[in-house]
Amino acid sequence: MPHNTSSTASVNGAEINIAHLAVIDCARLASKEPGEIEKLVEAARSPGVFYLDCGSNKKYLANVQTMCAMADKYFDQPHEVKMKDYRESEDRGYKFGGLDSTFEIARDELVQKTLVLPAVFANDAEHFEQFTTMSHEIAHTMLAILSEELNIAFGESNRDDKPSDTGLKLATSPLRESLSDITENKHTDSGTLTIQFCEQWGTQLQMPDGKWAFVQARDGCALVNVADSLQRLSGEKLHSCLHRVTQPADGKEKRVFVLYFLRPEKGGCA
Image 1 (cartoon, rainbow, N blue to C red):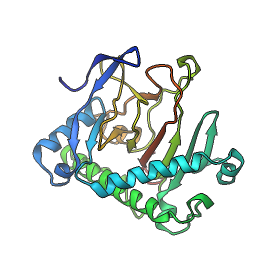
Image 2 (tube, rainbow, N blue to C red):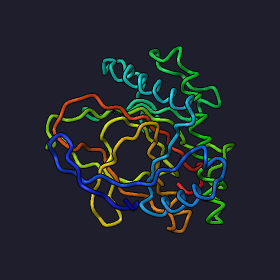
Image 3 (cartoon, rainbow, N blue to C red):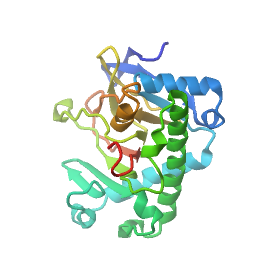
Image 4 (cartoon, rainbow, N blue to C red):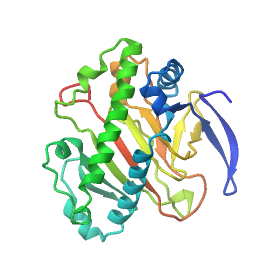
């Protein structure tokens, strides 16, 4: 089945479109195997979204599972406890919107040792540091390859020694009992690259043919998408895909997302 296409399938009694996306091996990409590099560039051009197979990095995947458990632990707290982590006019910290909530940590604060974690994470700093370090390395590996292949200096707007809003986010968006309860939230990401893990149906993409298609979770794989600043820096050669959080059918269940947002340095191409 070619990439950039979709096919229909039945999920919980609902007929849905499922996206067919490239699967790029993280280890082979790090080794700069030509075939994986070609797949990365093609997928970043269109549809701008792909699976990144992290199966060879058992430590990273174990840390992802830890982060999922930590997300559950955090969001299970009473709202008034989580509100202690709320930050006015900042993406960081706790944010809530009805059933959906997020908790974001800035990489800069982790690196500079200025981060004050919520009490529920008092003994978990190393898990956040490990996930951030590994995700950051993976994101910069992809960025460096795209930079080399397109002959565009993306790294000049994503320097590690400059302040940025790069960070990790834990999110909860429970399945709704009825599809009619879901509010429209289609968007593109504003940063450079996004790495996402979710074990359930959750993300729907607008494919190149204009159709919306669901992304099926794959064991050991992250979903990676090009974001707005990278599209602009590439002169529109790379594509920031319109997507949304939704579900294929009625249902009521917990659902968590673990994400890493590589964002450009402040004062760069935001």
